[in-house]
Length: 137
Image (cartoon, rainbow, N blue to C red; front, side, top):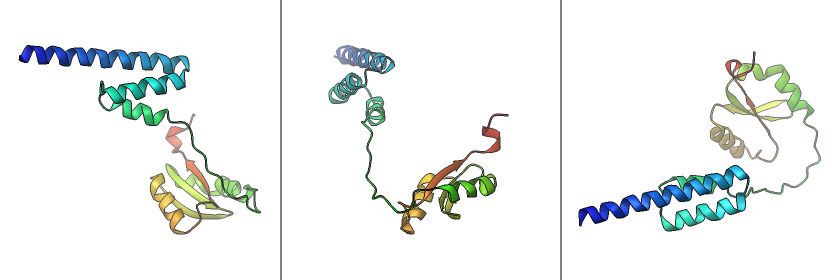
């Protein structure tokens, strides 16, 4: 009986690997709707572990949100601030409004939390300042 269960598990793993292999081919070919369907089947049948969940999230259709148009559309002040000051914030996310730094930090989630607490989420420009070592020579 143990060998029968073991054989079924191996067959299930091979089927799971086959589904994931087909899925990877679909993604490589750019057949995203078909890949979404294939990964959905893999999730429903339970053939593979966490890979289908991760791929399903990755392949979700993009979402957008509509933000009311504001009076101010130019970001010249923010870009001037970045040119003048951003080098001091290597490896950090910066949230800027006009010529003012609203929040900064290495974790985007923390910067966004601070921005939201200040009620500025629809106003700020987010910028990541790479470390000098990350840039090309």
